[in-house]
Every structure is written in C-alpha cells, then in structure tokens.
Amino acid sequence: MLSNSVNHKTHVLIGKIVGAHGIKGTSKFYSYAESLALFEAGSTVWICDRHGREAAYEIKWIKPHGRAALISLSGVDDRRQAESLVGAEMFIEKARLPEPAPGTYYWFDLIGMEVYSTAENYLGRLTAVIPTSGNDIYVVKNGEKEVLVPALESVVRDIDCERRRMQVDLPEGLGPKV
Image (cartoon, rainbow, N blue to C red; front, side, top):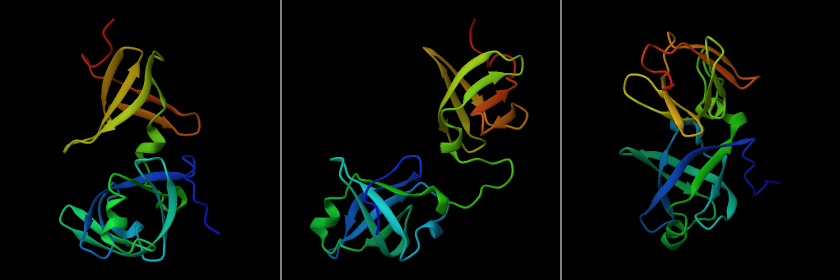
C-alpha cells in the first residue's frame, strides 16, 4: 500500500506543476531533474498542493514539451482535476535517484552543511545553491553575514556528508568582512 504523505528525509522535491494541458487531465510541469528518466510510467510521485494536501499518484505517461514536460497521472482524468494541481510540488523517493558520480553531490545533500575555512574558521551554514553557466555558487550564511562560495575544486577542499561539513579555501576578497 502506498503512503500518501511525503517524508522529507526519504523524499526529494523533483518538480512543480505549472499548468493544465488539454481536456483529459494532463498536467504541464517543470522538472528539477536533469533527465525525465526518473518519471517512468508505473512509478509513483507524491504531490503536495498549495493547500498542503498530499497524495501519491502513479504516472501513466510523460513526454517532453518545450522547456517543460507533460505528465498524465492516474486519477487525474479531466482539465478541472489537472487545474486543481497547478502550483503543486512533486516529490519522489530519494532511493530512486541514481548514485552521483564521484566528487559530485545532490544539492539536498549539501544544503544545511556547516562550512569552515582551511584555517578552521566557521563561515556559516550552506543555505542555497545558485546554478550558473560556469559553476554553481554556494550561499553560506552566518547570521546577517553571507558569503558566496564558487563550487570549484580549487575552492571547495573537502565535503564530508557524514559529518555534514564542508571546508573551503576562499580566494582573496571572497571571505567574510571582518
């Protein structure tokens, strides 16, 4: 039997429903995944709507649609039902994600880590990841202070997922103002 609630320790946000498409209950959504392969027919997604209601749905089919995708969910059979899901967030079980390549991490594994300099000075907690065309940027906050850390091998020296700790060697001028 499927659980109808999302456990944020075992599930990950993977997309957002942004519209209804056609009259047969198809939804348009933006995927946060690099590939639509995670959304195979017969697999389950959990939907949390804008009113806080959660439910598990089986995927009937999915296909790319411009920069978004179209998805058909069991039990969503007309436009009115699809429109009621607009704005809802879509989750999958983390266990369905492929293992990241060595030296790469999922954002949800990094967010919340404590960040230290190579001199062991506490810089703050990683609160967000900003994607850019060249490399990601890690947003590290300590109270009102914020440091933007480029996600480069030359800067990020160590990531310890078990200890939830990152060590960085910030280039001159990127450190916190003292």
